[in-house]
Amino acid sequence: GQWNTDNTNALSEAGPGDIIISEIMADPSPVVALPAKEYIEIHNRAEFAFNLKGWSLSDGKNSCTFPERIILPGAYMILCQLQDTGLFKSYGKTTGLKSFPALTNEGQLLFLSDNTSKLIHGIEYSSDWYGDVLKNDGGWSLEIIDTDYPFYQEGNWHASLSMDGGTPGKVNSVSHKNPDNIFLGIENVFPVDSITISISFSETVLNLDKNIDNIEIEGSEVSSVIPSDPLMRGYTGILPENLQDGRVYTLYAGDEITDFAGNQMRRNEFRFGIPDPVQKGDILFNELLFNPFSGEPDFIEFYNCSEKIIDASALIIVSVIDELNDTSSILFVSGEKRCILPGDYYAITTDRKSLLERFSSSDPDKIFEVIKLPSM
Figure 1 (cartoon, rainbow, N blue to C red):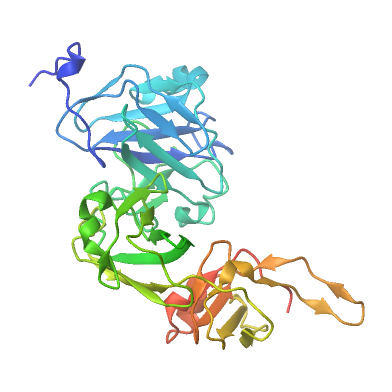
Figure 2 (figure 1 turned 60 degrees about the vertical axis):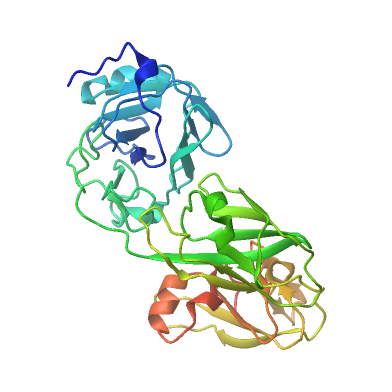
């Protein structure tokens, strides 16, 4: 049928995942064959046309707003800096944006919102996603593999296989079936204060506010939740009554809370409590690996031998050279607030994935990745 692109009011309202970010050229040089400029490609997965007027593309710090543009069902659109529009027009429908976000090579947050600020799609991409050492130095785009699973992040993106270095404006070169079958679930729960908690999920959870009666703490429902993260992986929850000092609580999330693909959580319970000030002897070094096999990471394991709940982010670690009375730079055990419960183990490493492969009997819920460890 014909789409009446003049009657923009007759076009549909988009839902999450209808329009998706499908390709990112964050590091265009050294050039392979495409213009030496950054671009993002979006794709309409839906059966309807949408008017993008008033929509925004944001990196969490800066946003740029779309002019009036129609994107047809199944269509692709290239987004770039306003002054670069002419360079990409031969590749497909192109929209130049003022204040187009600078795409960092290492990775960053990017998200699309409609004209009511509703999340439509977003990702937090990483240079680790290229899956090809030769291509993550520049000239190649990152492409989504299976557009049916837009909120499936790491594992559903790869460096372009196109001889041009990317496929702006057309079907991705890496496109094939790659279903999202796993939702790991709750990653952290931490009390902001005695009546407020933060909840983190491994993936985007849409409409958690509509499933609030499926979140319980010791049999009591949470009073309200609001997103604390643009991609809706994190929420702030308000409790019906105050948390008690020294008590360990369990948050339970029901099966109705799923990821975008409809997967239920593997981890739907999480224990937490209000932390106490840490004192000498509360946390012990329990195991160290300072001389691993080649290519494998060090690790440090701690043990909470106290009856207290300890906040891992309150702990700092240094290495000391006694003869020189010298210390290394101070490193935090955790970059985020996280409970170490009484009798719990807590291990840190610079490469969690490798460590879990090496020590397959380890508890993945007790191993956390840090950017750096002190010299051992």
